[in-house]
Image (cartoon, rainbow, N blue to C red; front, side):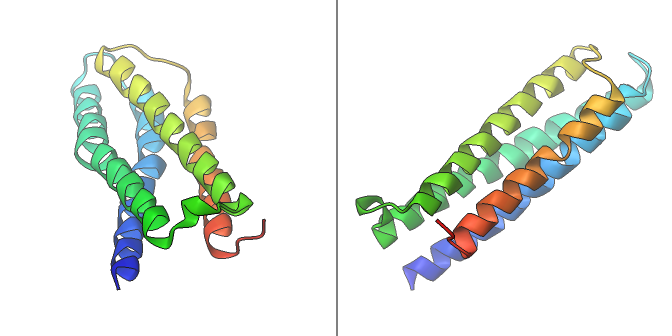
Amino acid sequence: MAYLWLKAFHIIAMVAWMAGLFYLPRLMVYHRRTAVGGETSEIFKTMERRLLKAIMYPAMGLTWVFGLALIWVTDAAANPSLWLWVKLLGAVAMTAFHLWLAKFVKAFGEDERPRDEGFFRLINEVPTVLLIVIVIMAVVKPL
C-alpha cells in the first residue's frame, strides 16, 4: 500500500514540476518583448520568480523525494535495470534544465535580456523530450 501512495505523490509532484517547466520558458518569450523597467516587465519578473520558488522548486524536490522513496521501497537499487538508469539520467537532465532556467529568471530579475525570443521558444521543447523519455522508461521499461 505504501508503494501506491508513494507512486501517486510522485506523479502529482512530477505533474506540478512539469507544468512549471512548460510555462516558465513561455513566460520568458513574452518577457523578452517587454521594455526594461516597464510595468509589464515587473509583472513578468514577479510571475517568473513566484512560479520558480513557490511551485517549481518544491515540486522538483518532492518529485525526487518520492521517486527515491519508490526505489527504496521496491528495492530497485539492489539490482537496477537499464531503464531505471535511463530514467534517472532523464531526471538529472530535467533538474539541470530547471537550474538553467533559474539563471535566466535571475538575469531577467536584474533587467538583463538574455537571448532572444526564438531561443526561449526552442528551449520550451526540452522538457517535452525529457518527459517522453522518462515516461517511456517508467511505464514500458524497454531496456
